[in-house]
Amino acid sequence: MEKYEIDVRRTLPKHASDQIDRYMKLTDFKDYLSLVNISTSVVTIRNNNSDVRIGEDVIVDIDLYDGRDERSTRGGDMLRVWLREPSRHASVSGYVIDHDNGSYTGVVKPMWAGNPELMFSIGNTKEHIGIFMNIVHKYGVIQFLRAGFIKGKLTESTLCSVIPNIPNVTDYCNFTAQNFNMSFFCGKPKQMNCGDWAVYERSSKIPRNAKHASLFADYKYFSKKVGTLKVLVGPGNTGESDIPCHDVSSNLTWYTTNPTGYFYNGEWRSLICKPSISWKYDSYAKCLKNRPVLMTGDSTTRNWFSPLAALLKLRIFVGRHEIKDKAWQKFAEAENKNKSLWMYWTPHEIPFYSYEQNKNNFRSVASRIDDLPGNKSAIIILHWFGHLTRTTPKQYRDHVTSAKHAVVRLLKRSPHSSILIKGPHSFTYHEFQEPFDYISRIYRQILFEEFKDLQDKVYFIDQWDATVGNENLDIHPKPSFDKIMANFVFSFICK
Image: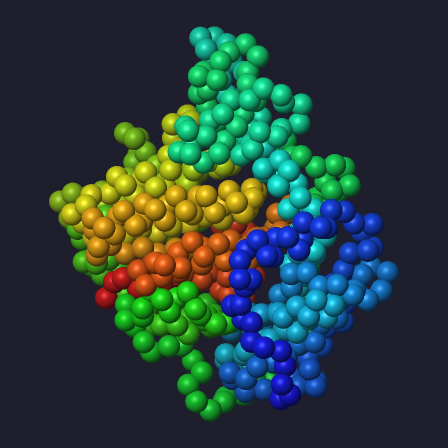
């Protein structure tokens, strides 16, 4: 096979801001036909090489064209390639190299013998990315939040953002201190004071003009089949790793290459390590005994917390109330002191797009980490993505930095604690405003930068390959996937 571009499977800019500046220059688009189009774009397997062996690179040449069938001459679009074979419940993701001239090279590695389909999609257009980034940098968020003020029988609500720039608002309440020094501003109520802030919720108000609104609302996620491969058994060890995950250093998890694994028969086969714990009560009760577990983030980590609590036969409480439904968004506890089992889940700080609730329900991730006892070997799973895709990379970095400092404090008083970060996962609604593929790349880079000096103590769990390959559409992966990945995560710290 002929030589192609340098392997950039996990290569990101030297600094996240280098990538951001490129897109901030894109503030508009001519019309829909001026955007790159999956139907007119030309995607071919190089040298028509559809017969390959397991582990060989399949090279895909991609030339993007717009809706007028005119060739694109600029790069910056976010593309995906992957293989799937539904009859075998098998999939694997590839990666794409941007040549910055409208042409791209996709690379995907078949990992099983069979006849997989080669798939291609345009995740985000550069115009979508640029317009989104300009909006959030101007207003702080792509979707405003709302504060509710209560004084006696009086009630009032105002819009909020992470910066004091909200249309038609001139007077602000600065709630940054109450949001654990994460910037947060709300319009000042007309009949009350800022001190009457009581509740908090998401709003439907989005700062965009009609043309941009139509772009976000009408933009659909499309994929297309490029061809079918004939994959034969190849020489050498090309399957999943035989190294137990608990023997893998945390450093290695930050420097993985694509693919990190693949699905076969519906099972995740990691190329990094072999899961070293089974999804059984005895295995987890033994591993987690006397080790408080704190999961932070959003509903995707809550969907790890819930099945694990059920496996350990723990009841989940928010305050004094047992929680059985799936919609709770508050700090939760699940304990069995007789068995020395403690589990906690907490949402990250505002901005968090929740239903109406008491403002005091939200505390910083750092404060939750600081609450953990100093005489225990705690387990912490950190995650920031879904809700924070609606704000700026700067705000994201502030959240990460705050928690990182708390991790440093924890490791000083409890040096045998285990810290794991759940990376961004792929989800692609049929209509969406956030350019998730682009944001995931920037946020992953920020995580790398902020935890660079702690990578020998903190694990990074890459979720992207798995969720691109299995074509995950919803922000909530399927329950079966949650158990698979939660078990994979705990394999790094359990035998």
